Image 1 (tube, protein in one colour):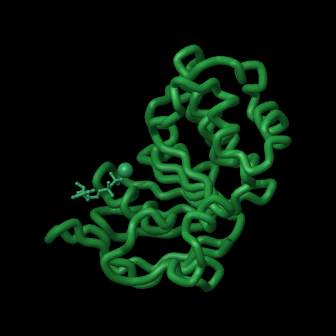
Image 2 (image 1 turned 135 degrees about the vertical axis):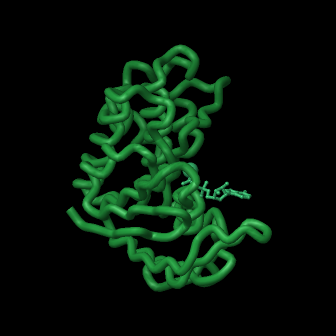
Image 3 (image 1 turned 180 degrees about the vertical axis):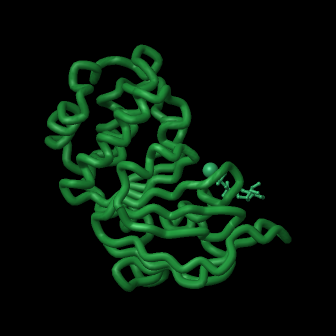
Length: 211
Ligand SMILES: Nc1ncnc2c1ncn2[C@@H]1O[C@H](COP(=O)(O)OP(=O)(O)O)[C@@H](O)[C@H]1O
Ligand SMILES: [Mg+2]
């Protein structure tokens, strides 16, 4: 899915956050949004992923605006996966049940958990596994309906650097298989895994480059 953001601007109340942003996310690409805390990464990612309406400007998904994609819930469920800094797994459900809760096709659960290396942890609860394993379960939940694109905001913010690289490697692997990723992080290491890097500074795109 090709996503184009045109002339995006965003205000929180009177505060002017994003200014004049034009951006294209190519289908199946791995895009990193990097920049310091407060530079506008979360705001931009939220706008590109349908979670936040920009104050000005528009976002299109394969040429269609949000108003034109039909039912937004259906659109998200079939097209988009989300991963956040805090895994947001339900603590009363096992890892497998958390993935199953979102799944449109249950036969995909076990193969996906296996490919993420957490198949033997399916019966455990989130407080019975490590931070890296928890985040892999959250990634399984994001990938279970084979979304065209996954948006991840600081997905490694709670992980040590070894587990963080493990998460980037997983994203890269699924990206090589055709899933698009847009990942926001203050961690510069992320850029080494992406094919497009968007560098944010004080609410503007400072630089976009391809690797
Ligand atoms: N809901 C909000 N209300 C008011 N200001 C906000 C809100 N969210 C973010 N901001 C401000 O917008 C700026 C950009 O924030 P954000 O997009 O979260 O940046 P980043 O993810 O790079 O840290 C910051 O100055 C932040 O304080
Ligand atoms: Mg942020």
